Image (cartoon, rainbow, N blue to C red; front, side, top):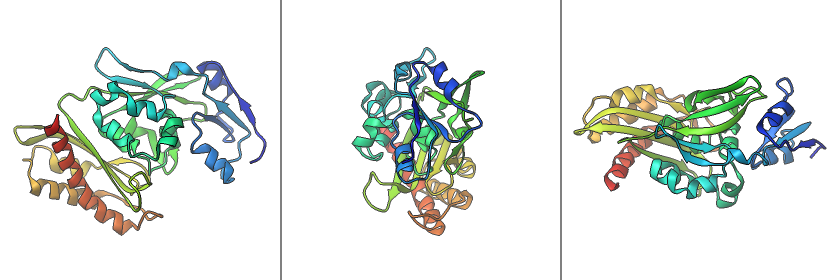
Length: 288
């Protein structure tokens, strides 16, 4: 690795002030699980890294007055995984984290870093989009809130400016909604997926009131599939509906070819796994 400056600010304001909106070689570093690999491979050669480790105020998990759950951006994924508050609020997050990478990574990687890295193969983004989550972002001019589905711009790219930092993840109250996440990997369950599918569904008397269907890994970023959602809305829940939703999702998804499989292979996975994820969400609700 080439030499670089390591800055260790004591406050959020100091951290933002050390970032440079015009210099891509200046980056924040949280857990560093992805960034360090990029540096070792020579893909990224920083001039300055701004460490966020001292920002302990960004590592709390708390239920808010409106019923939403706030998770600080510097909270390690392993802490989120073990949190009773997270498990009660959105058990699909806990279930997803148990197969995300491995425990060594989860002990170090943070919520904010995981999202800011924007790797389309990551597991949490589709889940958070399906749950209607938002992120709060701090910048020199103040704070803004971004829906999780609007955070990701393209392959390894977010809408964040270079001098903006994710400070928290907000997961709204889920009420009677049921959710599930399934992924298809070519090797072990914790490996990078060829496809990730997250769904959230609200039903009443056997009919779908609303649904959110999100896929990742097979596409350049985690995306909602509006056609599949429309196919589900107002329809009776049965096996035929799950098949129709899978067909609609496969027709809509713009899949990509990479080391996990061809675009055609991933399209077939979408066709099958969307229905399976919906069935899993319904089964999760039955077990509550």
